Length: 229
Ligand code: ADE
Image 1 (cartoon, rainbow, N blue to C red):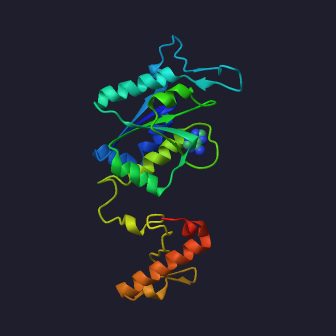
Image 2: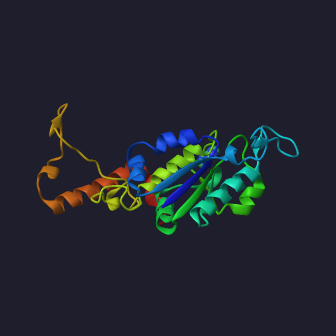
Image 3: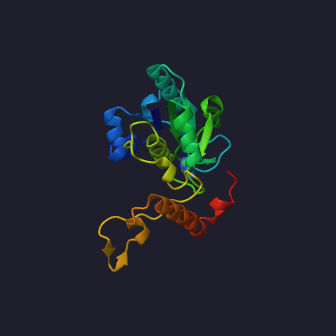
């Protein structure tokens, strides 16, 4: 998987994506992530990338051309046309199924981060394949969304997590939240680890975990049980 992020704040993205599991996976070559400064693709002598919207209105709008030039640069460098995602509060809300879809069906993603009041509509018409939101609220820019998407997709790519990670058990994978888990010590602040987990009986443990997952989902996220799969 290759992910290119077009942003006005590459250092913000780079700081997050150089850290922890994604940072290690990049170094080890399991995923490629590149952060590009859209300003570097402006042909304006002051490297401007934003102007007031035609017709009036609040704030500034990002121009189409620097984003397009950044996209062309990435296409040439990668020798492939990426699937283009515009991070926007108007997009489809990211969930685990969408992250799995991106990880399984695309080899190259190009993420556009907007700022100010948004971006010129014509770049969306020209190159964007899908708009993605990370939730029903408005952020100051698309960077946090792009970072969330890169993390959620990146961790699903081969080699990024250790072999023994079981995606099937994770919250959201099977439409249920994950069961509660415990580690040492066996008693902490007077709270004991459920006895079944110490029983060594794998069938009983699996059944208990499933029951707990259903119970938790009913308590914390009943909306997930109502959703059609
Ligand atoms: N940019 C601004 N708000 C956003 C959101 N909710 N998701 C993704 N990108 C955004």
